Image 1 (spheres, rainbow, N blue to C red):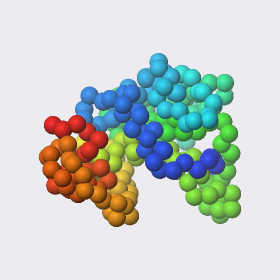
Image 2: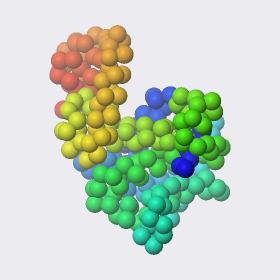
Image 3: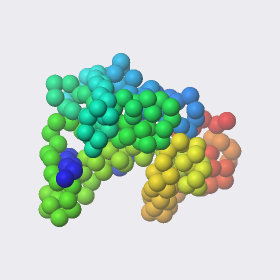
Image 4: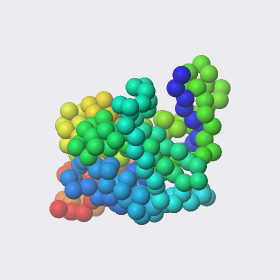
Length: 232
């Protein structure tokens, strides 16, 4: 039975901040399609802590990457995983790595998920069964390592600002080069958050259209300019 790990609770804002930092340290060549391979190379050369570090955590240093050929091992072997021994190591199937280089959506998601583990987790995680009946009394909401890594992958590959610009799951999947299911999940998550936070809309100066207008979740209600981005 597959295992998950109990980790400390992390607010979604922290997970989103980790993803935003990755965009700053490994800006992709294409505006909406994140290059996970480029990010992993940055983690190897620059170090994990330079990209994202949670205050109070021990320093992790540079990432190590080890390849294996899943075709020569058990067919049910995981395509990638992370270990936290003396150093943080990503162990990945060579085909997944090459697939991500070629823009294969599944491969890109697998590596983005593992980056979530690399940045957010460490060796203090406690293993538990993925069986819902066995984890209910042990793991609280937001304490699953797999759920946090999935959330990180969503923020990394489909940032909220991109969802605002392309609020259509098919278009979102195409411009971000992600699986259809991930695009749909991110669109639903951002729509839910927008509904909850709509009361926090404010009138502010828009750097895009230059007018005082309603700005909700950092996006201008008139021209849809993302306030975190420079004016065109």
